[in-house]
Image 1: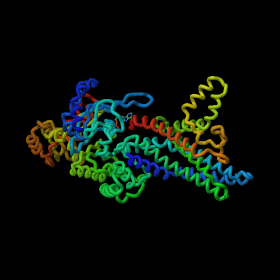
Image 2: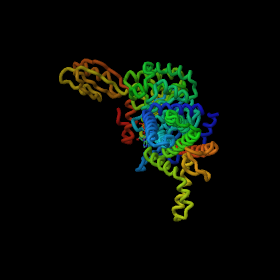
Image 3: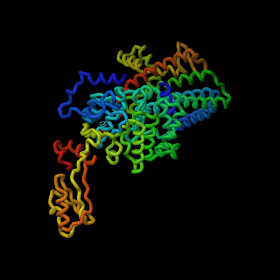
Length: 355
Length: 263
Ligand SMILES: Nc1ncnc2c1ncn2[C@@H]1O[C@H](COP(=O)(O)OP(=O)(O)O)[C@@H](O)[C@H]1O
Ligand SMILES: [Mg+2]
């Protein structure tokens, strides 16, 4: 029934994109991902303009973003601070209203209480009632989902163990550290065993062990066939859990897709590490190599893709160099991210920014 | 729906009773009553009168002040501490949140009024003074008054800062107790402008005097908690009025609250 609604919505002829000033801005990213009627999360030209209090200055936090997240996906919503990630998530959660565009969860236009019944949400830098213990907080949360006392208690026990807080279950949250609060926040997001889990910056505020634990939880949610939508400005490890990512910058989607699609799989050149005899210069060996001398006396030369490795190595060996390692370079998510986010500050320069 | 409202109510109550502030108020009230007892002993034959007056006055005054403080902070602190993001992203409607919080405050203020009443009653009991149902009628009226004040505080706080809301609610509390004087201005042959202002004020200000009638005239008869007081029918009518005010203020507060962005 809800799918029907959605189909009707997408074919709406009144769909008005005229407000988008630059045709290049027009969102075409709906092509990526599932069809709207199969989407768990669906955004269409979503925009939000805040008005600063007193000055009335307009802040365009979101400038029309469109994409869809399908069932069972782990979707990374990436972007630097201020990109508009939290704004998008707050619209989805019904906390703020969009200035333009539409959004739906499980086919229900937001804000929708029925959609929220099927999702668990961890807010950014979460705050809970600090006078409650973790057990009480989970009990309250469970009650709001219509769970009874026994069900809450049982589930709370399991989850506190899963997030590593069983020892602190009866301590008031005001005595929790930031990392502990983040773990408690994940527990409350999972209390109702939701089909969709939305996590705003779940990795921030955590130490490496905490991050690994959260990533493990995300992986296990995928194994349970849940849909996970999480935002992050930290890229470390994100690539290992995400099926797809969207990169957001200045309120626009810059890239979206599976990492294998987004990242150029071909080698971006080769990195050759050499130990040189005195006075030799790596550039002398030909190609377009750029060299850098490292602390330990080794030299790292980066060859462009069209350089011929064999020739370079032959000349280097001839000159008496010892080859320490030869590593093909591939584009990393970090490079893609930087390219996507830089191109905003200097339009047109994005492509040359990262080789 | 009721389950969720109740969950919010219980949590609000739990929050309030874990605050030191409420204990401070309770101690203040018990202290006031004891002071009244001492004062009463010094005034010959007036012991019962002083104990009742002070006891009932402290329910109305301290109850209303607590209602203002709790009321203006009720939604504000949730927004300020961002707990509202966690709560409203759950499968709840915003009106359920506001109603739950109000109900939780009703429990809290009910407990407080009960403690105040107990303090007054024990002093009367210990001094072997008469405890009549008149007192309980007055207490019921005060409790409704306190709940009306709480609803006003929530309404103001749904669109203005806690301090401003507190000042506005406090002013309404002050004026709301002086409705007979406004009526007198309207009836008198004063300047037309005064009468227009008085009439306008009477229209927007809830008639809190109706809940604190001791010592004034009702239906042409003098009523007092010390001699002949109003009957339960008056109390029930006043409760009805109070519930009407509460409903009105909460509907307005919810309408404003539901349109707000929480970012
Ligand atoms: N309530 C608000 N009023 C005005 N500007 C805001 C408000 N909330 C966020 N912004 C602005 O909107 C932009 C996007 O913010 P946000 O969605 O929090 O980004 P992210 O979560 O990606 O870091 C930022 O420039 C931020 O300053
Ligand atoms: Mg954010």
